[in-house]
View 1: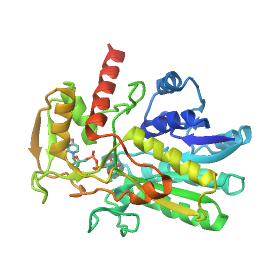
View 2 (view 1 turned 180 degrees about the vertical axis):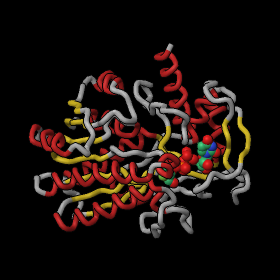
View 3 (view 1 turned 90 degrees about the vertical axis):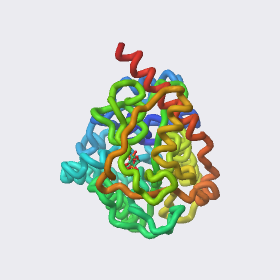
View 4 (view 1 turned 90 degrees about the horizontal axis):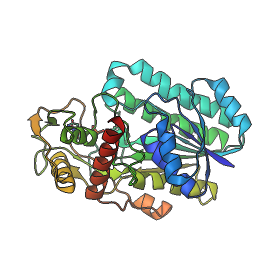
Length: 339
Ligand code: UFG
């Protein structure tokens, strides 16, 4: 029996594939390479000694998905494949709805009539919007996400809840806070595509001299240093949470059809703390200037992670400093690869 990992060569997907293989799962990857490169598969192989079966296609091609499901005995699916750039989603909302929702619907159309009972969905804390109280727990009321990207995640969750109930399948909705860092081997990490939107990749490229200066969006938030607060979780810790969620559903340790978990560290860090932390961890300078707030940004988000700790027996254990070191090591790897 194998685990189908869609988007398995992407940032979180590739780290999860490594953890799955190291936990002795057989992995089948589907990825259309729209936001990654095939050499990540080499990195997975170098780390684990296993080269998973890989199908390069777009999940909107349902006939190709059917072929994969006929060729392999699939026990569960972890679905990462999606467009994920918040700003881009505002410019191309229909592309985001088409890609993120049609892929999901094709998977569910196939699974509803097959004996594949476990589905793990890559969701986001964006479904909470600016929550009224911190920390955010799974019962915190959902708000309309600010971006079309966020709305595809919210809609995806709703579709999966209906699917679980109507077809009696198990669904886990994993709401990530802010994933950062790269594998400690520096053989896989987030591939830069154009100008980064996210804070840590932008800091890293500024330190590397690829970007002239980091813009810190907003110095007037009602926080201790005036910059916005997020919960930055190390990507390998996040990947391990997927394995824990998978084990829970396939070993029937849950009666509920729908399990929802916040995946973060439980600790908020400000933008300035991350910048200073990066400088200290890696002994580099990051040039920055303050700019007005970015449209759609919230002030503060950090997770209550007690449910995941209790029910998945999982806890993020890597410090912000360690995670920021791996980001820099991955940057060095990319530079040596390009030279
Ligand atoms: N920031 C800067 N400068 C930058 C980039 C970001 O100051 O160049 C700030 C942002 O304004 C924000 C913080 O750093 O205050 C974090 O920004 P990110 O873009 O790294 O992360 P977000 O919290 O905005 O977005 C993340 C995920 C999204 C998800 C969202 C949910 O990237 O996929 O959390 O809240 F939708």
